Image (tube, rainbow, N blue to C red):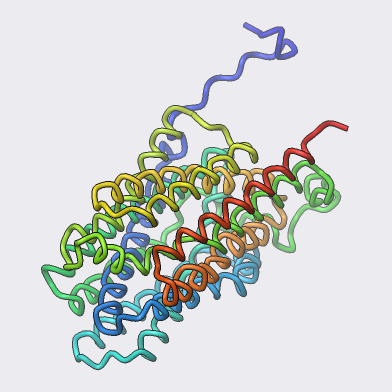
Length: 421
């Protein structure tokens, strides 16, 4: 049967739900990424709590953001270029090794009681550089390691990340209560070790000798090897999504997470119990729910204007959390925050991956990560350091309001550029 509205071609079959996860290689990659993200989240839960209890310094929480994200700002494109040239799995293994060093360092210092502020700063910097080796290489690996369309490959990356973020705070809280901070982080290093060893196996059936896009063996004379012009729709889409990722990360990002112990204290849950971990897990639960609903139902197709509208709603939800004085209400709002964050971030990431030219895809992804993750360093200033002066509730609320104004301007600019000429 053919469809006359499609020029006599056979109608396209509807996409399968979670199509990428039907591939065994992706399932292995999914499990390894989820474990690594869970270990990353466990380390944050325990280290942020101890930093708050020992130093009571919002400024140090702001430095945690700077040290975590500034390496992304300066080195993401370089990391992406390295992933274009070399095997991304080896770069991921370097990242996992640095993560293990950071967890072991925290554990030993907690165990000996010799933690000082400069120790904390150094370990936070090591953790930040570990992420630079990990994230661009993981994105490139999952988008170039199979013949499946890129639109099917974003799902396991996003779900693995938020699945780890969901279980990480809960497991981190259990480790903190059952083993204490020192032994909890020493156990956490073993989770990183599992991810390190898992990278030794190729996640898909790609032949090892096949040249990857971006290497010096790229095909010559191919029209698809040339990057799109600066005025093409593909370039405008990439630029708009990179700008969206950058401004959301600059003003808010995840700058409220290092301050979560103080938010928990102000909401009447200042003890290191499950209530504190639930605040960290609430937005991850919302994000995971969003991913399940959107991927299984095929809702909210990736469009720049849709991503911008979702980002506006996210700003409103962040402001609501900053103003909340009820623990139950704060949990509900954080769930909405996670739902909206996954929705617009996944949409922006998918659009960049779809339109990035294959020969330089690693560098384009590195640029997107530079904007989306590197600019989060400044949320340590807008939320953390300024929060030390005027209070974290006010700093987070004002940052969300300023971001909303910027996104409205970006939305108006996008609509103007989208009008037919």
